[in-house]
Image: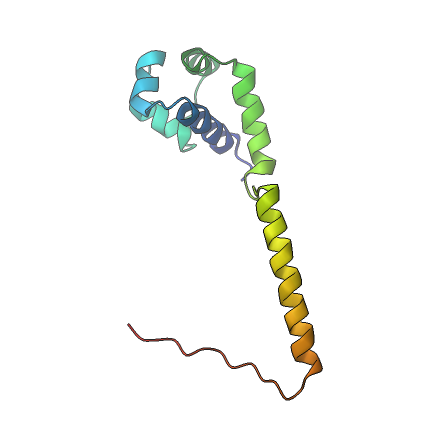
Length: 119
């Protein structure tokens, strides 16, 4: 996802939802149409710098904050995981590795996949 409009739209949506605003409420505050706000958030709209300024003012943030969030979204968007969840994944992987090593060392054990029930 390298399109700046898509990243900007995601950043805008994040700021708007953090402030618990609907697209209609943001549109009313900024003097824009809610349809255009939606287009921007989906990466379809191409706002001018004046439009971006109106949106930032309506969200009471700086234009720089919006663009900074848009550039940060590119690297953070794909794999966002908490430290706690990461630790749980590592522990599960270690447990699976341990089980697989025990199974591999015992040739008499065969893995049989469970039969799926038809619905």
